[in-house]
Image (cartoon, rainbow, N blue to C red; front, side, top):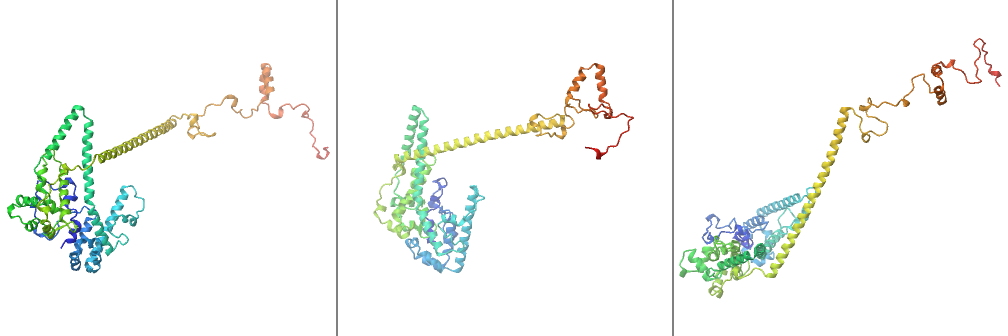
Length: 497
């Protein structure tokens, strides 16, 4: 009943989408794990595709499979038709209730994406920049961003194609990630050797070769998916007699969710016994990251051999057909990771060159940041010095106001203006610049000289004459005043020439 979900979500299950650190421990035998009765008819809720739209994908598939018409069409459609979009056209025939719920799911997903976009803009410092949600939503190809309100045939078609493409690329990306891990581990080992002297390097190399030898010294590993490998699970994990091995019974025992298919998680659970032969978490020479890579390699190999319709699921029919092949009965030996170098020396050289460039870039950025820090410190010192000078000037002015002392020339006001606080403390004016008292007129310079040359009594007389009223002073030559007893004649203006 959950065939579509299996097609899309079984591609990446818990053991393969989570990081290696979160992988199922080897001490747990996943072949013994049984789900509660109430979950037999549904996919395990812990399964996650690892896609950023996993929840949206899961909810859409769950609601579509609740529609009777769509469910019938689904079981009559093969994977290739689904990839080509033929199943998406059946959306027009689902019930109104399902379509309404799908519309709601799409609106919620668009709102979630917009929130994520806005949060990213805020983190990057673009708070004041207007966000063009329509333009940014174009990067999310699994939905039609031009219509954010209703779930249409194009939305289902986009969702299926995007999920299929993303999941199919997972194995390739996983291989590349593991290769980088292995090269980084070797790079760090080589860098450590450079720090040692000749004797230290010799001992370190000997220890390294000894660990490699100990890791490779393990029991024979059965070919994944072969009869010998499955019979070992039948005997040791299921506790059954190896002589009674039956492929159909074995399939039903290990189809833990009862959906009629082996998904990738169920397949990987079959390889635990083989992995225990190679890896032990307590051994120094065994790398648990490599153990999970080995598990995924085994699953990928079986899928390629048994999954004939390439839907990333193994049906009972596909499994029974595979048990009759020569590869199942007389398989080749399985080459483990230590027998297959993940990278070449050329790839290692390019990887180290890339690391060197990254390290150089980091050093340059660090130097730039240090320079910026020094510049900021200098600017701060200059600001502090200016602040101190300003404070000193303010303090000096305050002291001047308190002591009533005239300010220095450079602090005086321009022009002749004098601060009000300094108006009562002007310096004395020299005598030659002081004004004469009232009634004391300036004496011509020649008269002053005559007075200086005259005898003292004449000088005193001269001083006294200076105080004679104006009318008693002698007139200039030619201007004799009439006698006091002479009658003054009125001036006849008519007789004036």
